[in-house]
Image (cartoon, rainbow, N blue to C red; front, top):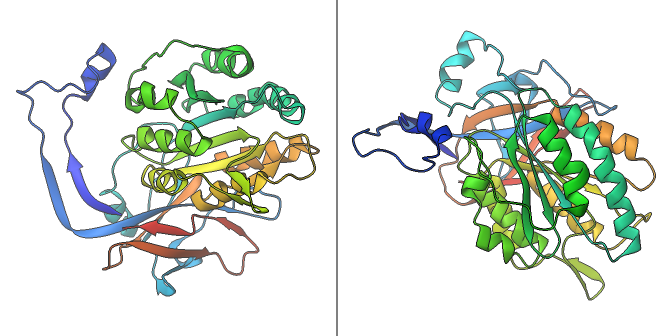
Length: 342
């Protein structure tokens, strides 16, 4: 939920000069709080081929919160630069926090070099990661991380495609102790605690730290997880580790959608259920790459082209709310988180 506020952060121009997080005491900050609360939903709508369905308006969406129909007030298609809005939508949308040019995309490689079914698939998808990076817009910024028994940052958010590609093609497999370098705003490294990253015992813990680090950055983010599994097999079913609930909440607050690309060389395996769970809970999708990697990458490319921002009035009651978003009569698939907290 957003309580609309307009902030004048006069210290931001100093970030690139190495004064991250420091504001001179003589530069005032102020806020202006309006009396309305709105919820902003990040929603992807695709057709039968997986391509984005464009041109949708508020009347095209059916949104139910806790089973009750809620009208959509504004719809905005977001790519690198937000398009112009009709006059009747512009006033409400202008109250949303501004996003910098381009999108923020995180590539996270889950590595296990001891299990044959996993290492082969990781090597294949790390090589194909070039296609994901090259397919993004020039102004989009990409961060690259690896998780094995800890979370390691290979590349902070950058639009330097050479730097990002080196991290993907070499660092994801071979880099052991990369330097912790903080880029200018927006920076993932600036909000990521190195000690907590080293102590992340499970993938759920790593996702929790990423959600916390991404929350201060404006706008929606996409996290592409090249992984082999999440959770543990207990009593014939997969159970997420204890940090999962907190990780899900942190990813929601940070407006992160997770796209799980399963690198395991197997037609099916137990831990894929965890990968599918985190994708569904955050408005992303799960796809195997074992047999048809081209299809998985094409679907990812479509999803990263852009998404809709839907604005609606927040529920009067605070807490966790069930969410259902539909686009009836279009034969469309809607990717949206199943709940939100206000």
